[in-house]
Amino acid sequence: MGTEATPDVGVAELYLEYAHRWFTGNSELYRQWAEGVAESATLPELIAGLPAPKRQPNLVFAAARFHGCPDEPFGFLERYLRTHWPAIRSIIMGHATQTNEAGRCATLLPALAMVAAQEQRPLALIEVGPSAGLCLLPDLYSYSYDGAPALGTGSPLLRCSTTGNPPLPRALPDIAWRAGVDLNPLDGTDPDTVAWLRALVWPGQEERLAQLDAALATLAALKSGILEGVAGPPLLLAGDLNERVADLVDAAPRHAVPVVMHSAVLAYLDEARRSAFAQTIASLGCRWISNESFFMDASNQTRGGTDANRFILSLDGVPLARTGQHGAQLDWL
Ligand SMILES: C[S@@+](CC[C@H](N)C(=O)[O-])C[C@H]1O[C@@H](n2cnc3c(N)ncnc32)[C@H](O)[C@@H]1O
Image 1 (tube, protein in one colour):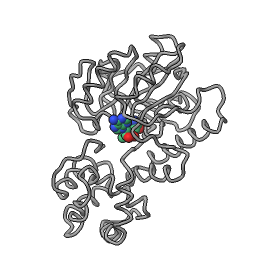
Image 2 (tube, helix red, strand yellow):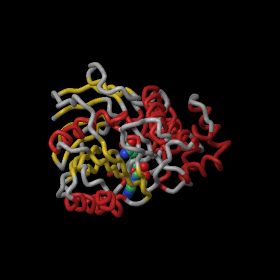
Image 3 (cartoon, protein in one colour):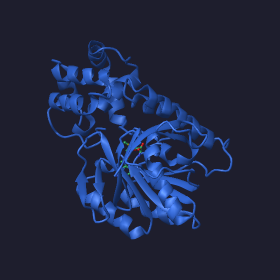
């Protein structure tokens, strides 16, 4: 979802690319806004004043909405950006697109269940790039695959359509420990952070917003100690995944099997850092679940997916499925 480093192209070209590649079919208002920026006489120059990695439309639009811009037609956005640019610019400079998508747990769950079945031990979940850690709570949500009765009783209820007859879990995995490392770990119980995470959900995606709110409520309940008999809230470290992942695997409780996972993260890394990560993972003796826009095996062979809106789910370097980027679709290979 536009998570790659922003290419150093002209602003109008960048916004048109996002309009067609990412927003069409996903957010009609963002498509109109992005096309509007591309055709505007003034906005491309304003946005070109940002450092290249900060020019991406989903960041600029989220910052405008976080500041208070309503979801109105492009003309309103254009005036709003011009009027409030210094404040919006500072929001852009101080924030990143750390979208946290609890819905991805629906596509991660079959891989987690495979590990649990193979290992017959609880899992120590270690997420690299967890944002606020919402994907570290898969045992606290509930799931309905292809409209079947819900597995689990937690909230949100995550709905997912499947093809290819995936091995759907019959029970939720036993999670013994949750941890993660992020360049900028977010506190999902802080009101400003919650407002930012909500602003990152594209206009018109009401189900994603409801899922986010429900997952944040579950995180808050976990942190307040209301939920009993489950592993506590995620331990989130600040740092680079390459530098801290080994510490986390080492810190996992001994009775649990360490599972390193990530989704929508590796596109932030250049080739050398991805390669270093694959080598580290291979040396750690942990299980490894990847859900990214490209497939990467343990020897760092990468292959792009054919559909920009799809991720590839893999376990220990073996591809299992193509997945909808927000977790609503699972196409088993
Ligand atoms: C798009 S978010 C995805 C969050 C979560 N994995 C999910 O699927 O909802 C990507 C996250 O990766 C983090 N990230 C990017 N590069 C990183 C790095 N080198 N080390 C640690 N975290 C990183 C970002 O800060 C951000 O929180």
